Structures are given as C-alpha cells and as structure tokens.
Image (cartoon, rainbow over all chains, first blue to last red; front, top):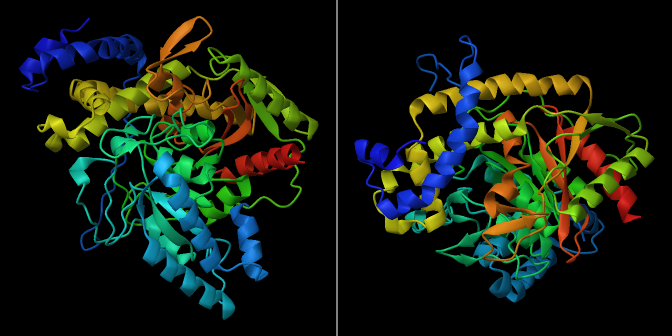
Length: 59
Length: 454
C-alpha cells in the first residue's frame, strides 16, 4: 500500500496525522479497486474531458 | 395533491396560486421546525409571485403547468439577491447577483419560489446531517436520514411543503433522497439541463433535476428546465422532445433489462422483493423483462470516485487551508482527493470513455434497465454502517453503490417509490435509460405509477 503520510508531506498538504490515519483505509481500498483497471487502457483512448475552442470575439 | 392536480385546480378556478402558496407557507411553518428541510423561506417574495401568477392566469396568460405552483430549489442554485450557501459556512454570506439557468427557466414557467432547501454540506455526502445548518430529518420517520445531498428537497416534497423541489446529483444526490423519502427523483442525461449558476461539486458528474410527488410532475418540470444553454460548456443542442406521458400510457413491447449481476447483490431482502414486484407489474402491462449482464459496475464506481475526489478537491483547494470551516466527513473526502495523482485522474477519465462505449452496447438488447435505487431503505440518523445480510457496509458507500456509476456514464435515471421495507420506510426503483431518452423512462414509470395507484 502507498505511504500516504510521506506523499502528503512531499506535497506539503498539511493534513494532520490523525486525519491521514482516518482516510488511509479508504484510499487503500480505492487504490486496490482502481489500480488494476489502468493496466488495460489502450494507448489511443483519450480522456472524456470536454474543451471547446471559442473563436475570437465569440465569448 | 400532485403538481398537475394543483395546476388543473388552478385553471378550474377551484383554488388560486395565492391560496396554494399560503398553504405551502403554513406547511413549512408547522413542519420545518421538526424536519429542517427548508434553509431559507421567501414568504414575501412568494406571496408577490403568487399574486402576479393569479393576475396573469385571470387575464388568460398561461405559462404552462408550473404557473402559480409553489416550488423550492436546493441551496446550491444561485438566486439573485437571495443567500446561496451550498450548505457551507464558507458561503454563509454569499448573495449572488445572478440566477441559475434553472431558476430563470422555472421563473419563466411561472413557478412560485417559496424557498431554498437544506442539503448535505457542499453537496458532498448522502446523510444531509449538516454540521452548520442542522440535521435534516426524513418525514416518513424523523429518526431516519432523508438521504442526500438533496435531503431538504426530498423532505420538502415528501412532507408536502412544496409540489416540486430541484436537486443536484453528482453521485446519486437526487435519486437517494427520492428513494429514502418516497418521492420521484429524476437525474436527466448529462447536458440536458444547464448547470449555469449552480455551485459546482464536480465538473464531470454534476446533474440537475427535480424531486416530485408523481412521475408526470417530474416530466412537466423537465419540460420547463431542459434545453441548450450557451453559458454551460457541456450543454447539449439535442432537441427537447415532449416528456409528459399520456393518460393510460402503454409500455407494451418495451424491453426492460433486469441485471443478473451486481445490482441485485448485497440488498436488503425487502428491497429485492419490492423491485422484482415492480418488474412483474411491468411485465403484466405488456413489457418484456429480459435478463441482462451489465458491465463491471464496481469498476465504474471506482472510476467515479477517483474523478469526484480529484475534481471536488481541486475546486475547494483554495478553502482547505482553514480546516475548521468543514464538517469532518466532508474534510476527509477533500483530503482524500488531494492525494489522488493527476495520472489517476486522467486515466479515470480515459476509463470513463471506454466504459461508456461498453455500456452503450446494452441498448441494442433493451430499452431501459430496472435496478434498486439504494440497497436499503433510509438508515437511522447517526448510523455509520448498514447491515446487509451478513455484510457490514459504510452507509455512504452502500447508498451510492447502485447510483454513482450512472453519473459517470451521464445516462438519465429516475427513482420512483416501489414499496416499503419491514419498518414501513420507502423503497426506490431506479429506471436507467438511453442517453436523452428521458421520455421513455418517464413513460415506463408513469405506467407503473398508474397501475399501482389503482
């Protein structure tokens, strides 16, 4: 499992240790469910995020 | 009385909008101290709106079925000149200078806004046990939660304070309170209803929709609020069809999928029985019930959680330094989101696209799906876990298990009451449809409602 405390420190997130201990089981569970899914994504699949280019003067 | 019955009575001059509004305000005055469903009540404004509606109707200016009807909106919808808190102390003094698109459209349809409903803090949870504005209680049993995050809307409609209340749904927040409070709750297709002026929780997953006392009430509300809005980048230009199911509408030949995997696992037995009974009712009305296997919903839920955690935390990052402003459950979710790597977020959005394609194949086999809305009826206030058979599950994860994935896919889904559990608490049936096919799920639900109300 990931070392959440070290990650939080590295990113300077300033999450109290007791709060980190409380959320670690949820993060571990999500990690277990999510990580295997990422192994089989074909390279050409793009993220489902929309971005619309607005022509000049059309805001 | 339903919204449409009130609309008919208005046109027959059996009642006025002023009388309906006065009755609504009286209900709120009597019931709200116990239920805490309404966060803000707009008594004077509502009376003025009702008076104007009566005058218009008297002069033959009829804006449609919502004209003169008392309604409420969740306190996530911005209202010009009226405090909009999103259930958070961060926005305790936020008085918008604009109306949300939905508020504009409801006003154009002549609805009378009597107030704003309470909610789970920042729309980020399912209990509506709000640490800043108090606990919202379920009108069916005040010792139980109304669900959330649109808990005030569910409680306000179920207790007949208003005929319709708008909610928002990021991971089930319309359908869960509908299920727990015994109302109808409609989450439309992504892009169908504008998000403009709604305080966001998650850019990818937020949806707006009504909670009502009947299916046809939800249909006429959707009719009023649906449609393209250039101010919302995700708004769809797909034409808006007629949504109101006809009287004695037929569902002969409609193919209804009953999932053989995931959705009927880990349920309260009363929920299982109630939902299957509704499937049998649909079959007796001429629908074809077909067993289907659905794609991996556990995976879909994991993808949804990664997207929600990351986007919600990104949105609130600037406020998180002052940790005292948040309830502990919401803060825990924001902290989790700050620990989601950007690579996971991007891959979750890629998986979302893959799963959308995979799920779309189902629509060649069936026209809609029947599932439970929630695995259990409303838990008691303060319960952290629920017992489902021999399993113990976190309340939030259990309540969102059957609904969250549908937000990831952006599909329309409707929750309707379908029975009660052994404690007499309501149970919800979820009907999931093809993209932009709200008309079909509303028709199926209306046929069932007609059949079960006879």
